[in-house]
Image 1 (tube, rainbow, N blue to C red):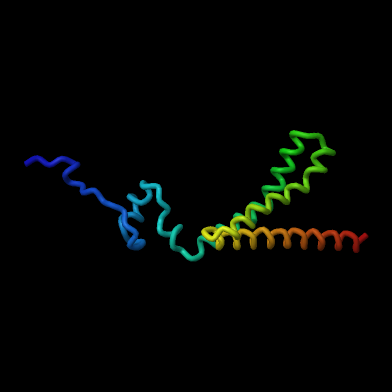
Image 2: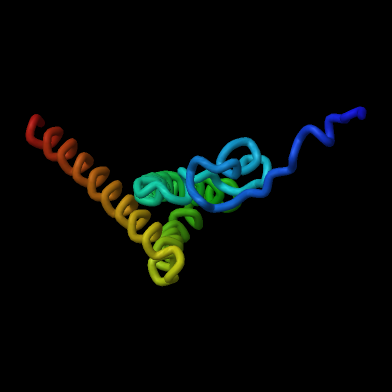
Length: 133
């Protein structure tokens, strides 16, 4: 009897029984599903939410200002810049939705803590510069 490669390899079906199953190895990665670490690890959502908030508060205003400056003149860009606060609806919307509430809370925490640190350091630098003059 001649065996081919198709006969020798039995097909595997992914199952959610834990991190040691075949779905979390190569079969799970090729199926396009997240690995067990992304689904079940208790630190993944808080870390990804916090750093998403950090990047959100750093990138959204700067990209918004760059686009406004490229599209309009300086005076109009300055007048329209406060509308970047509308972007805060994103983390607030994530907090309201039940499925993304935990991620949204950590994202909002990342936004607020980054803003507090940036404003605190700026105030300290201004205070040092004024007191030295």
